[in-house]
Length: 211
Image 1 (cartoon, rainbow, N blue to C red):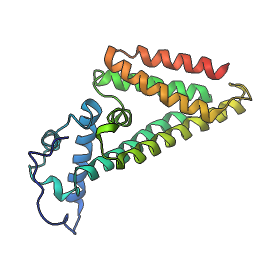
Image 2: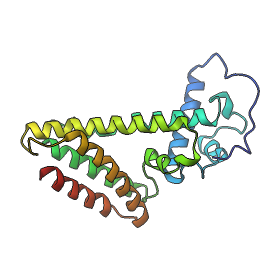
Image 3: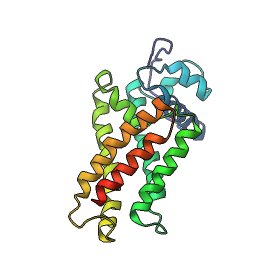
Image 4: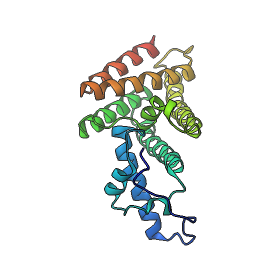
């Protein structure tokens, strides 16, 4: 993310942070999420985010201490957004536990198709760029993956109790495997501009956990 065109102004962010301040700050976060899910952190300039958010040049540092702090806020915001998305599928009591994972997969397919396979997973994108990113991002990225793994493991625990998967299933390990494979499937879906890799991975994962 290039800072050359956005010069930092002296002083701290304003103390009186009313609704207008919060709205603009959220607009910057939303714009950052949209751009970074397409391009990644290293290939995104702050100018592009400011234009998309409709925020004047030079105003960025009224809302974020620096570029690194902005990146941390983006990671946390995306983690919360995606956790809510997972729970919409995983908490659906009308479906069996494994069917809830299938529902998440189908929703992800629709989401990627909606944006023409341009957008991927922000956490996965940043993970691939980690060698060029601030070290403070590493802990946040790992914590986000652990949170997602915990949510999948909980559904797999329910599937085990319901007899959908064997009683000896190691659900924590399976959940970790899910996200390792899922991020690769998302990358392949972007490359092929097709949801087929998502479906292929899900099919393989379901065969594995049922074995």
